[in-house]
Length: 100
Image (cartoon, rainbow, N blue to C red; front, side, top):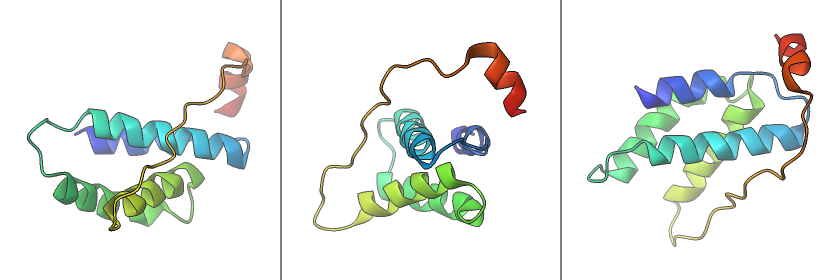
């Protein structure tokens, strides 16, 4: 299921709070884009939140993901901040290996 894969990807340890924001937004967009066109958004969002909520205190990117889900369910509806990260070098393969 897409939500499990998205949460697993978000469980990496971001180096900064800004990076956690970026990862959380990208995770939300990945999850949202994987929903079937005829799905019930509110039901899917509640299920995703319930699966993710146990990781809010330990994984900053998942906390951002959950914040976006909560914001998306509030009434009246408002646009979400889903800006993409600025393109920049992040260290390449050496940095990814060191992060493991």
